[in-house]
Image 1 (cartoon, one colour):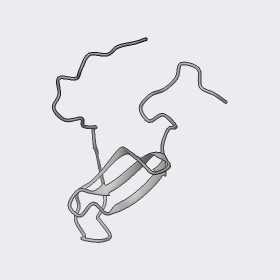
Image 2 (spheres, helix red, strand yellow):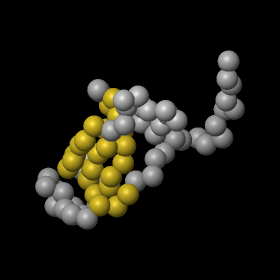
Image 3 (cartoon, one colour):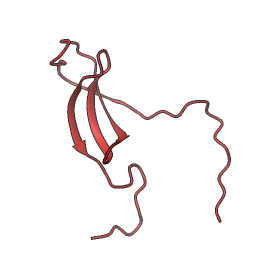
Image 4 (cartoon, rainbow, N blue to C red):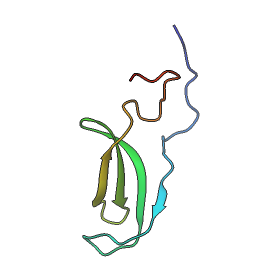
Length: 73
């Protein structure tokens, strides 16, 4: 059985990438793209950071950030 040390970080975070464009809801220009875990698995989303409107949502990798050395075909 593998054991992993307890993380030292108080909060888990993910890198969010800036995206060009405007929010269709609030006309804000603060769009970010990042992976999220939601109903149905992992999704790659683009969201407005002001009102949290989902501008784009695509299915992500089956295991999120975990990539197997041998991918199933």
